Image 1 (tube, rainbow, N blue to C red):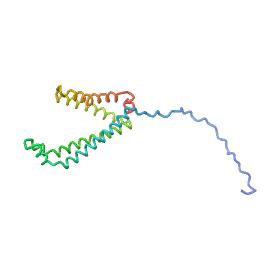
Image 2: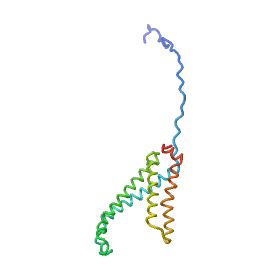
Image 3: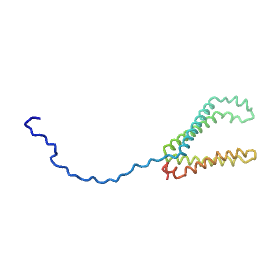
Image 4: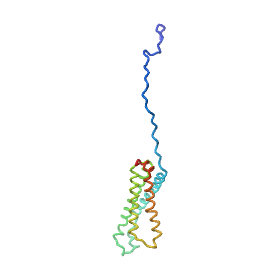
Length: 182
């Protein structure tokens, strides 16, 4: 700056007009959803079940590849239907596929339970209803005998009572809120 120039004017040429900003009501951030403890427990149990199903599937796939049909024929004799014996590796592989699908479903349900996905609630309800249905059909078709009473009671507890308890829990309001179903 030269000595001949006037001092700089720090003030703006025109005063700004003061305007009140529009009043925007303060909105609180949404309350984060809390995952119910029971859902966390069910998700962990689903992971454990998925791991066990995956181990079973791997074992069945290995068994299907190493089973010796001739040894089975030698052990059971020629009176047993040969078609069943020859289908043993295929049956092991088919069971392995069933256990693999079960493992995948268990891991999917666990993920959905942890994240509160609505589809996992629906899938859990459907699988619990199917579990109850298949267990009832199994008990009815097996028949009742006095010697199998203890087994029947344990089977009723595990196969029917626990899925019913889980179903009742899944239909609780706070649980349905977690899954966006309320």
